[in-house]
Length: 273
Image (cartoon, rainbow, N blue to C red; front, side):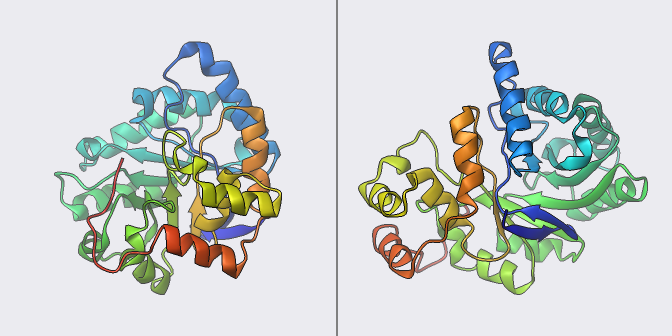
C-alpha cells in the first residue's frame, strides 16, 4: 500500500477513522471487526479521540487492538479543556486505559482552547519523555494557529478536507507542504453521502472501475504529505477504502474536479465539523 511519513514512521496514506464509533453497544462487535479487517488489509493507522462517544470509540479501538497493537500506528486526541499542565497527563492516562495500551504513537490537541500553547506543548513533551506518547501534534489549526505554535516538534495537523471543503488549499496546505508538516484529512468523503452522489464523481469512478468514495480518497491523497482517515463499518467499504490507495486519478480527472469544485481564490475561515 502507498505510504507516507508521519512522526518519523511510515504509515499508509489511508487510515481508519472512528468518529461515531462506540455510541451504540449493539454495533460494537461490527465496529471492532471492521477495524481489525482494516488492519489486515493494511489500514494500520487508526485515529480516535477522547471526545468520540466520550471515550466509547477509544474502548472500541482498544478491543480491536488486542493481539494487534504492534501492527498499528495509534492516534488519539485530547479535549482542549483537558490540555493544561495537570489535565493533559490525566486525560492521557484515561485514554491509555480505555485503549488498553501503554503507549499512544501520536497524541493531538483536538482544537485550540483556553490554555496557552506553551503549556500544552510542555505537557506533551513530558508525556513523550515518559514514554506515554511517541509524538504530538494538533488538529483544526489554521495557519495563524500554527504560526503561533511555532514548534518544529509538531508532527501533524488534522483538518477537514474533501472536494467540497478545499479552503486549506489557499494558504494552510501550501505552507504545511513547504514546512514538511503532514496533513491528516478528516471527513475525506464529506458527510451524509451527498458528495458521493455527485454525477461527476460517479462518472470518474465508472471510468476507473472504482467508486465515488475511492475517487474522493485518491483525490485527497494525490499529493505527498496528505493522509486520509475515512470511517467504515461495512466490510465492503473497508475493502474499498484499502483498495483506494492504489487508485491514481488522471490529469483530466483532476481538472474536471477543479471545475466543479473549484479551489479557493481567497482566504477562507477554517472549516470544522
